[in-house]
Image 1 (cartoon, rainbow, N blue to C red):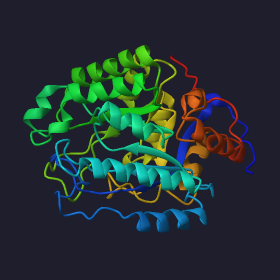
Image 2: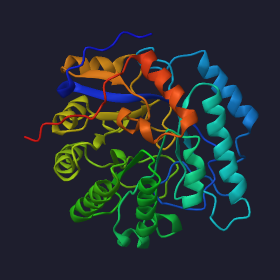
Image 3: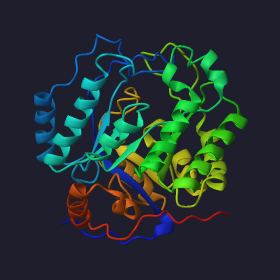
Length: 344
């Protein structure tokens, strides 16, 4: 068992010790900024045998940050078209990979694009939480970066957030910043998230993800300014309910001073941290204690968390509850992390 951290909650930032499992990189969307996707038929699906080998190797290792064991398995997949004859097989594959992770002692969190109500209902039984980025709700992006991305229709993605609330699935969503949206677009997307959360009280975190150019994309734009990110964190903290954590990805923030400024502005979570960021493969995380040192030097304490916050444990499918409680006992995080905030 790990020693319980001496938490000063006002100076605490959390992260999830994670590993990303990719069932397939194929995706029927073609977002012009994407560095993840491969054309359908060009990415072999991850076999259960291959996945088991990876998961078993993780049982014998720790995450690359603070020697904490890997807890979360992020099942991150490209999207198979809803009308495809392979859709059912793909959903079954997601289900099976999550089941594998659970059987080997990990906690799955799935992000696989918009899903139907019944698909989400099925996957809830093998996930402790799930997620979907709203990115931006303005329909103007359907004429530009989302021109060839049918599942990026704003109403479709909002529907997914609402369905997650109806199903009592602890959920993560977020904004992608710097893809052609306006300040008003960002504000309205944050307000939409706040509105849905007030209805269902199910959104754990909102990610503020700065667009970061990569090698595979077609957009070739400029990176979203870290200074502007700091300002948006402060705005988001005013818009979002206090029990929704704001998450910033530390590998996409170039300067440590800007990361610290984001925390001072109200960000309290750094997301899943693993050696490879599958969505932004050109941007590695600061590992080997570097991130912990940067935060510690500025008075912040980095604390591991599970992919489900304690206040949502009651929503879990019954077979998942014992494993979650075992992990809580193991890392000694027994107090609910509701990320109390100062709104000054």
